[in-house]
Image (cartoon, rainbow, N blue to C red; front, side, top):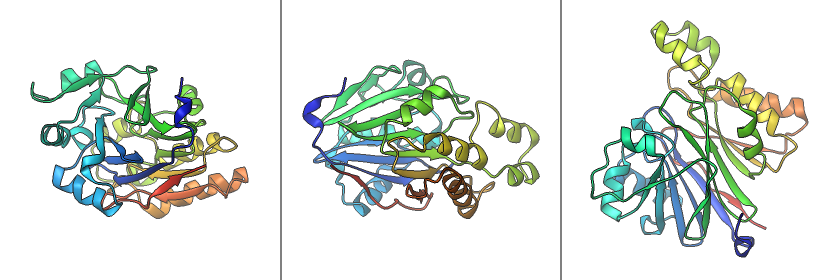
Length: 267
C-alpha cells in the first residue's frame, strides 16, 4: 500500500550508465535519492550524479538487482564511504563480497519498503543469476520501473510496469549482429536464452505490451557494445510505438558513457 501523503511529491530519474561495463540509475524526490545498481566507482557515481544535479549526500540506499559485477561492483566501496545500506536478496547477498562493515538489508520480491520519501517495490525477473530483481521506485502515482537483465517477457512483469510512468527496458542485442558476431556459441546461446537478455525485437514486444497504460517515458537500456547499435534499438522501439499508435511516448537511449537527460514526473 503506497503512502497517500506522498501523492503530491515530484519524482525524477536519470540513468547514469547502462551496459556491460557498468550500470547505475538514480531516482530522487526532494532531498531523498536512491541508486538502482552501482556498477561504477564512487568517484564516477559522484561525477555522473553531479551532471544531473544530485549530491551524493542525498542518497538513502543502494538497490541491487543481482550480483554481476557490472551491477554491484562499486556498491561495497560506496556503501562503506557513505554509510549507506545496500538492499538485495538473501541469495544475492551470499554470492556477493560485502564485509561486516557494510549494512546489508535483505529484500523480498513483492514486499515494499521505504527509503526517505521514496517507496520501493521489488519484483522478480528471469535472468541467469541466483535471484534477479527488478524494482519500482516512486512516490504516490509517480513510479519508475526498472526491468533489465531479463531473458524473456513475463506477464507479471508487464502488469507491474503498466503502473509506472517511466520505465527502463532492456534492448540488449540485435539478433542478426549477435548470431553473426564473434561471440563463442555458448555465449550467444546464453545471451539469447530465456534467462539471458532481451533482444531489440523482444524489447519492442515488451514496449508494445505497455502501450495504453500509464507509461509516458521509456529508457532503452543495457545495449550491447558489440551486438547492438543505438539506431537499431531506437528504430525497433519507434516501429513498435507507430504500430500501436502510441508515438507520444518519449524514447531515450541510455548509454555507457554518461547520464541520460533527467525525466521529471510531476502532477
